[in-house]
Image 1 (cartoon, rainbow, N blue to C red):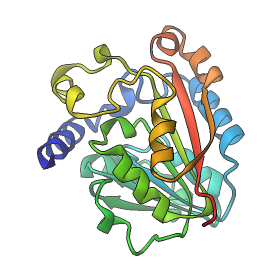
Image 2 (cartoon, helix red, strand yellow):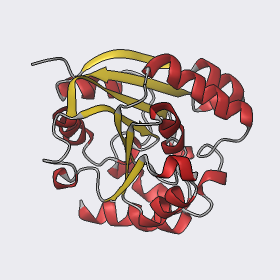
Image 3 (cartoon, one colour):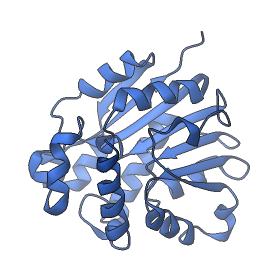
Length: 231
């Protein structure tokens, strides 16, 4: 299992510099970026002063949007396995946003990365195109429940990737990662429920998919929002 994480880290480090320019990873246009912002604001309701952990933050596609939503007094904790990706994420932040973001390098499965420091203290946990890289998603989702405040929320943004979506050295990982190429919106909500979270939204990102055109049809983007109900 450790070998899987090592391979992922090596691939992410190697591709970090050009990641945001790769099709499907960064924003291909101002219209696509605006559609993501609009969808996130509609579903999430994130506000100034809140704390968010951006899991698998990478080079910062989502991190920077989140910092704007929780400014000027909130906090984003950007976690990623790849140190090279986090370095790019950090360097791209504006000076006004840099004080709002903390960076943590490590494996999302590693409880010691988050506990006890963030136990029951987080308003939102976000993951854009990163749950597909979890070797044990239920384990991670159970950890997230321990980090969230009562009524805190998990926000997963991803796509119904196909096997063909994974190419080059990444292709060898498909069968080691249970969420690598799911083809139904039912999978992630089911796993979140097994982890003790209550799913409150599960839908396709219609505006994003429309802007993406053929890519939005072949690998439609979706959002799942789950909540930690009070004990």
